[in-house]
Image (cartoon, rainbow, N blue to C red; front, side):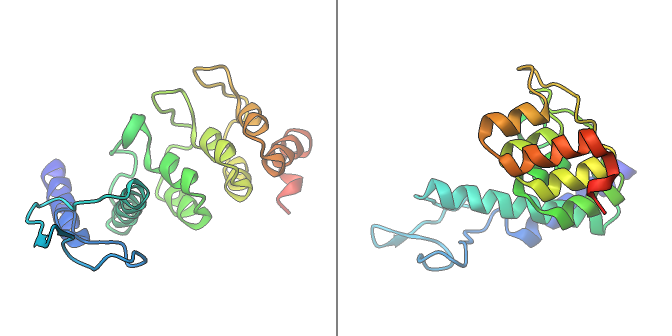
Length: 182
């Protein structure tokens, strides 16, 4: 019964978000609705996108709405895996959204869940350079000593990607623990 309810909720969500519609990003210079192609409106169910960056932003928006939908409807936030086996927590950590990370953790997201590359949300946040997300994950109990499939800890990823503020947060946490949060 729960799976049927989940499928129904996802179906309703996809209709609400407009997964099948030709919706365009409001910040785009393109007109809303279907894109004109050679003077004729595209009639496909999927948007006709010529800008890969815009397509990526739209995917991020849809995924963020899906995360919010799951939280607001008290669904299991660990149930769905996104690209590369990433959880909602991985995805939101990669976006740098501290508030949504906090909401996911309150909704019982698995803190040290690993994706197909052996990375946790802490790895992802450190690699992307989001010091505030790293700080929150550490405060909530994320393990900074875990290594991914390439042998990188979150500290090594932050160093490799050139994020000195994240490196400082992790080093301070290793030395002082919770003292840096206060």
